[in-house]
Amino acid sequence: MIRLADKFDIPEILEIITDARKQINDLGFKQWTNDYPNAQTFINDIANKELYVEDKSGIIAVMALVKSINHDYDKIDGNWLSNNKYYTIHRLAVKDGYKHLKVAQSLFAFAYNEALQAGVNLRIDTHPRNIPMLNLIKKMNYVYCGVIVLPNELVEPERLAYELVIE
Figure 1 (tube, rainbow, N blue to C red):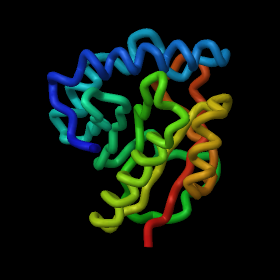
Figure 2 (figure 1 turned 45 degrees about the horizontal axis):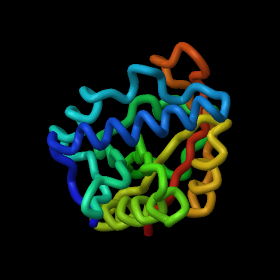
Figure 3 (figure 1 turned 135 degrees about the vertical axis):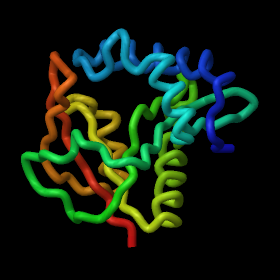
């Protein structure tokens, strides 16, 4: 069951994020630093009603579905598919042991349904060397739009940006 997260979920979410951060580091790139995302990041997501968890008698995945404009997307080396309103998928991570069970695809489908109901598109970005996420993004039919630069990232700030037009 996918549901909005609450503050009591934060310890389980942080465990998933710690494991995901280690896997990212093991792949040899820096997408998430040691202090991001952190508990405060998720507290903010919860306050905005933008943090979702997959709960199967315990949290097995997390995803922020940000409904406000992402100003990091204002400047892109490329072109967005549309100028329509959009939601952005961020901070998606799946618990070890559940990675090959299509849990992330389920979260993408949930985001699609939320966007469909709201009449908005979906956008996402990821590190150029995050091959597992890049493969998933392509599998879910997102279209590559260009490169964005995250101004607060001091190490490896470039991200590949994608959009899915919801019709």
